[in-house]
Amino acid sequence: MINFNQLRNFYHTAKNRSFTLAAKRLYITQPAVTAQVKSLEDYCNLKLFKKRGRTIYLTDEGKTLYEYARKFFEYEKEIEDVIEDMRELKRGVLRLGTTKAYARYFMPFMITGFHEAYPQIKIHLNEGSSSDMIYSLLDLKIEVAIIAKAEDHPDVYFTPFSQEEMVLIVAPDHHLARKKAVSFKELAEEPIIMKEIGSGTRKLINELFAQSNCTPNVLMETSNAEFIKQLVQRGDGISFLVREAVASELRENKLATVPMEKDIFLDVSIAYLKDQHLSPSARAFLDTLKKLRSPDMTPQGIGWLMAKMQAKRKRTSDS
Image (tube, rainbow, N blue to C red; front, side):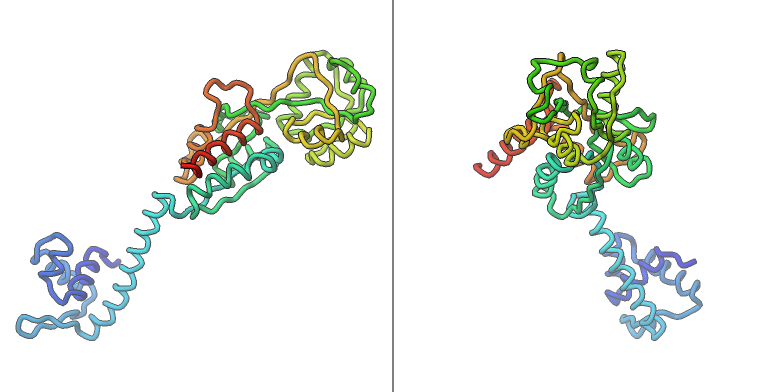
């Protein structure tokens, strides 16, 4: 197998047509360079240089080897530049995962801000239920996820990020819309359209029904929040969604909310693998997320996070 240290000494000697200049370039002694080149010639069983007076020349065999060595070390320089670019976040890939609600309402703002800071980083966003994103982490398809903690896993680290207010939504003319407050026992009689199993919303609502010693009357389950809103508007059932996901429908009186006896909040976490090295782009994104968190972790959701990012961008543009 060729010795790349010998090849490097040959390359610099051939490029500079001098053992002395090669030694200066490599920060070693001239005899050391001569010895390395001689070892390479012995390995190849070829004469790579010829000498006339004090001047050295490449043999035909040396010229051929030099062309390949030149290409090799040019690629080496390119590789070094790529490595440095990745370290400095001048290139790279960021693989993220999140729930559909965050993908629609929060991630566009977050990704825009991150892209402005690191324009050369390519971003891949995967979306699905919280459980889907956990498995995407475990399968190394993504590095960082923003999800509700739908299930624990020993290999996944969860750090609190935000709290989303969950609201009970009904059609404006639904009989519950006139109520000042309802309990889960009352809701057990109503057909309910649920988020899919594996979502943080589904887990939370199931737990709250169980705490009231009752079972939800599930009419349908789906991962599509827009479909849920359409069914509720038509009066086909009731549902629970993140407030931000129904904000426009509430403003336009297409939907109504009914207060629960106690406010409901969905805990959202930043998730990543415990024993897996994060890429520089993933670490930078993680740092950005942690700076966004409320210091005292008071209930702050998508709307608050977006307002904070917009205020930060405005201060930056004004300065």
